[in-house]
Length: 315
Image 1 (cartoon, helix red, strand yellow):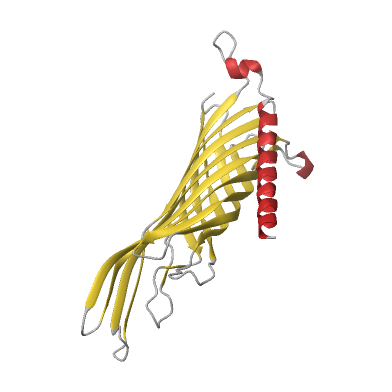
Image 2 (cartoon, helix red, strand yellow; image 1 turned 90 degrees about the horizontal axis):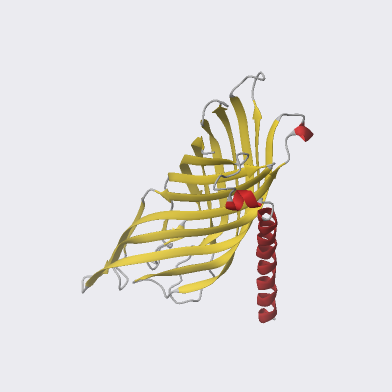
């Protein structure tokens, strides 16, 4: 029964990822030969290539991860701190077809946690631990989309619906020093815990923009939403910690943003500011299972904060 369920889940992953890949390839065949190879060394002037650079301050939250077992006390946990995200994206467009390739990197600042206890009537009369913790992620998206416009909403502007493939890697690292002892002996040792998720899956997005004000205005209202499902593997291992373990995982992701932009036909630059939210569910195995007799639990990650966007029209 378990083997059948495993084969069924694996087949579903292959179908979803295969569907997204086929859709992306269908979009690629829309590329005219002169855009791929050029005509006498000259590229098609109707193609538009832009470079986006986005920086965001992120306020992060989600489940706390366990970093040790002090005996009779509740398991000590550590949370995540605020951080920052950076994104670089290339967009190639022609005849309402839009091809996107983006790379996102984010990192939290270091958070700290500690515990200490003393039990004179027990063999371990005292114990303490002090750890530092940080997390990071890397995400690559390749999408193919179509600008369907905002006419259905009674507005002028662009409305790009895209499908594609997303790859992501999430990392969480905890390290510190621990001390246990009694009046007869004491021990001190370092500990490291590394949690990982690496996955790939289909992604769908909607990005839109409409002018604000009179027809000659350079201001626009920009918004977008994204959803993906990543299929991959969670790994948890360490030094002076529990035995290494891993399992297959499915991580749904969603994000959205709302902002205001400035652009001019006579200027190759465009600017934008706004607020963005990203959420990933079940990213890490947050448990500390020393003897393998406990159920693991998943921790989510939510980040949000203001962003600044600089767009450069390259062609």
